Length: 515
Image (cartoon, rainbow, N blue to C red; front, side, top):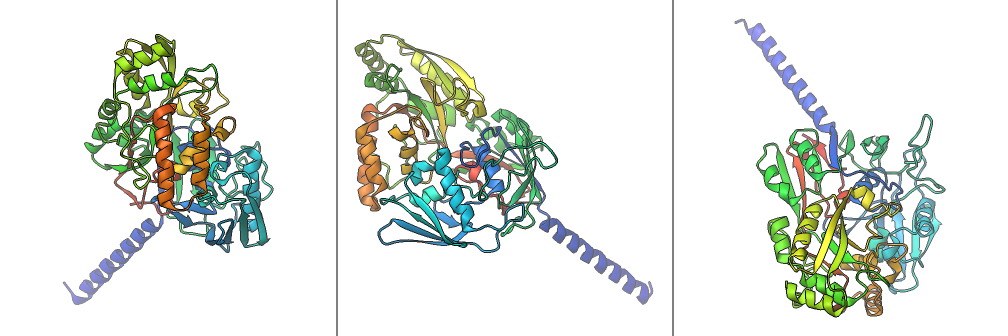
């Protein structure tokens, strides 16, 4: 072969290699479209949403002032820094420069002030940690100041609450779908993605926000609504989805045995609550009925059957073992004792307890209801029938037989970064009409202790307060927590940079790409 021909071949090979590298580089920069399977999002308002799919939708479109990171610490977001006054009553945040909303309007402190005032106006669940007596002001366009009347050791977590997403000043209809050529004009955040389609019951599509202040690797994202958890696994294994969360433990072996997918597991404070309403005339008004249900429940067996022993059986209160410093391991909970359960019901004048047990179609909760029904039936004095509701329906309080109103129900509580959040949200009297106190538990001693913990910044002192709360729940609490569950997700092997949050709706997809 002539030398000139060799040179031509070498040049051609080199050019081909360069083109291949450029193509690979372009492919790496183009992060692809991630398909995420989840249950349907129903409550869309950024200030009012509660479950994972609703949080995931809002997390894609909006940013937080500060955010809860996967390790439960607080990180910067729209605020780059913040300070707390020596007396703990003033929080000052400096805003990031150059941030714009999807419609091109610049972010200013007025947007933050409007957002946090609106949380009070609509009665957002974020108030469980923020309280309702804070004042928020804007001394200049890039500074936000909160003042609170008394020390709140978890106030910063309130600022980072799931519902505290920053909306535009004056927006009165956030996330309302409109008629006409621009139906998503009110889905206007500063977040990493822009909504391009929302089909109730079907899903949502997003494209990358090209003007985002930070890095976004994905070209876009799809949320595909599949209410049945097993059907989500089917779709993942068939290649129709790239990532799912809330995987039932009974599906883990199936996923692990498949090729091209991996299981993600995180220790969390996530747990199902089996609870009775305690208000007058209700099933659990008599403490002896609450105690009877505890003695009738074999929590170790529930963990073994439903989670294959992967969960942790803690106490019957929301202070999970994952909060290791605050968890009281010395408490001896009620052991499985069917005879004692029946004795307590007889003492309460109930005899045979009959009721309907409601549960959402999520995680392993339908199976939990079925095993509970069997355990309780074996006592001979507790008989329940089961009603399963789709998750979005069950947690929408505008529906009949929703989780908040039924006498006896199973509720899924997602991970929280602090036990104080769970206590304030679900077990203080303020939750009866506005928040999440589904059991209507109203105990003056618990109220006082939770308030005391809010104002206690010393962890040793807080630990002692939580120990007292745990012992009250042991004696007269209206709940059974069968186990604290790890969170299971599953992802295709070509997904890069995904770190599933303990509350999976808060998973940050900005660093994710498809390889």
